[in-house]
Image 1 (cartoon, one colour):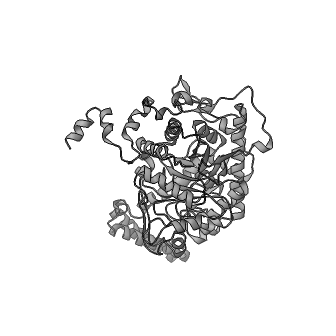
Image 2 (image 1 turned 60 degrees about the vertical axis):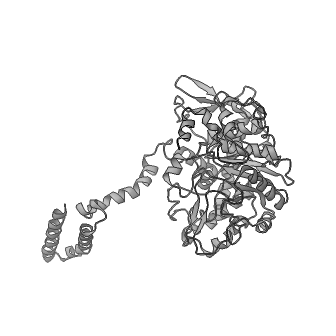
Image 3 (image 1 turned 135 degrees about the vertical axis):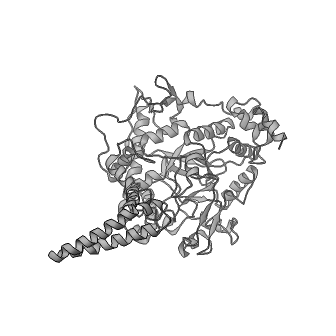
Amino acid sequence: MRKEFIIFSIIIVITIIIAGQFWSPLLSILWIVIPLIGLGIYDIKQSRHALRRNFPVFGRGRWVMEYIRPFLRQYFFESETDGAPVNRMFRSVIYRRAKGELDTVPYGTQLDTQRVGYEWIGHSLSAKHLADDQFDPRIIIGGPKCTQPYSASILNISAMSFGALSNNAIRALNLGAKKGGFYHNTGEGSASDYHLENGGDLVWQIGTAYFGCRDAQGEFDGEKFKEMASRENIKMIEIKLSQGAKPGHGGILPADKNTSEIARIRGVEPYTTVVSPPSHSTFSTPLEMVEFIQTLRDLSGGKPIGFKLCIGRKSEFISICKAMQATGIYADFITVDGGEGGTGAAPLEYSNSVGMPLREALSFVCDALIGFDLKKDIKVIASAKVFTGFHIVKLLSLGADLCNSARGMMIAAGCVQSLTCNNNKCPVGIATQDPELAKGLVVSDKSLRVTRFHNETVKAAMEIVASAGLKHPSELNRSYIYRRISETKIQRYDQIYVYPQAGSLLTNKYPENFIQSMAESSKNSFIPVDQFAEFNTGLAELHSGL
């Protein structure tokens, strides 16, 4: 094709010049043709792309088609149930509720009710009528040692830092939370000026880099923590152990993104590379971790303290439960993030294949707390793809007390799922630090949309709760949700995820599915002990040969 391109280029130039002698306006075409020929010569000479060397100019069509492919697919070819990570059906209902538009659907469901995995809730012939004041149920978070318990909504904004999101996006989310009476998690980038500006309730997340409460060496600074935690609109503090998007993976704030503003907010030197380690330096064992929980509770004046994690090895969470049971120091809440969680940028392997999915993780965490007789004192928060009232009901039925949503709130604020979160080019000004793009997001309008989405989604959840014959979401349990497990068989959640007896992990006879994790775990270490060898034939021999 290279020779053909050269020959064709010569012919077309000569033809235009000759034809231009008879009609001079044709010569203006050379202003287009000559640059294209120059581009083709460059393609032939370059050595990075074989396609462009073999098919100069025309080979560039591949990159053009790759660029427009997501937009063509999303706007022209997707069905209502297609699209990832959020399908069109859910995006549409979020937009409609956020804008205050009609959110009903005509002509029945578009879901295949015979497919394996289809889920529904069993309604009741004694369905309830809820009064207007029952559409905003509250959950009190705060255990026996918490002196400033917090009354939370059942739907809130999940962790998203300033830096990952623009200043106007943070403003809109927080103002929406204030108007709607729900909380806004700061993410591990600390509570920025934009989180604090509008006075919405905040959950301050403390990550492994201790942004906002670190000393010059990057270690935890109690005095800085105390100063920030004393703010009125910081209602709870969350220790981030891991996140579903990239569990067990640290982070790097590159020097060029570490502006003076971000550096001031996070408490680091500007224009330097800052590393967030994969684990905490303040504690290294479960016992040390629960002591850290008590330290934060004391420094904060008794505010609720919890932690967030994506379940990896089950024995590690059991170790934390053993430490809480041994010391009597309980977290006030635990946020469970599924391995399907999202972030602006994560390695493909972590997004696809690291961490336990939320349904299994949530049921396991709740069952472990029940087994250690801790569930009555610790609230469980499910951090997930929450887009509709049924999503809330399903997670509460599994055992969560309330839910967090990140992507749902972003879509309510105007996200169009352009999948450009990782390159600073978000077209709607949400996941970007480009000031010109951020200016396009009008805080007053988008905050109202966030509030509407929250209110309408919680209302939808409560209507489902009432249809099941219940008055409060805390009455939900696993017996209410059905799941198709084959073409001919359905089971309730309580048959799939069988409840343990309360306190059963405090006895000598554990439920069968906990025997191995109990044997592996210790309050003195997160690392599984060698007892796990007896449950794996051949593993002991393998260890003896190492």
